[in-house]
Image 1 (cartoon, rainbow, N blue to C red):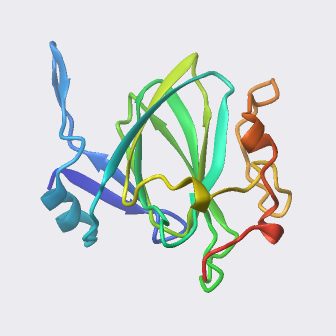
Image 2 (image 1 turned 90 degrees about the vertical axis):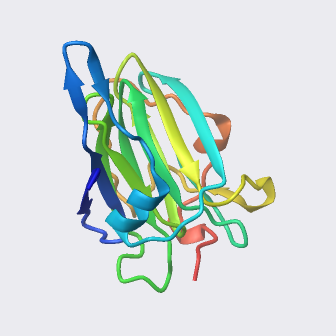
Length: 185
């Protein structure tokens, strides 16, 4: 099996650790294989879009999500540098509604995080720069896009202390509290 799959404290959010083959020349691993992903996770998802962002240290992006009919599942990874990646359960019917999990993703650990539809997602860049790659199960739809503020005290996300205030976009700085957010059923 090319992946080791580890459930997080929210069992629907999975950490995938690929088999990495390395020698004195460098390394190789399959970052994605539909058949192996299905076999490892038991999930039959269809990815329709790949995204790539580069962020400088201290940049915090999120907590983003899309409402139905364009809710997105995401398979995320950090190709260079390191990020603290967070998924927040915003499914009102879920026993883990309002709970979050955080995982460090880096170029060194090669780990990926599966975040199903119904979760808000964000990350904080821990290194000088980070290249962040992710696959989505639906296309970007501006009219369905929403943002929960990263610092919502009800979520109490334990973001790493960078010694500086996070660098935010205007959209992320204006995110709403989970208690006022449009959530999924």
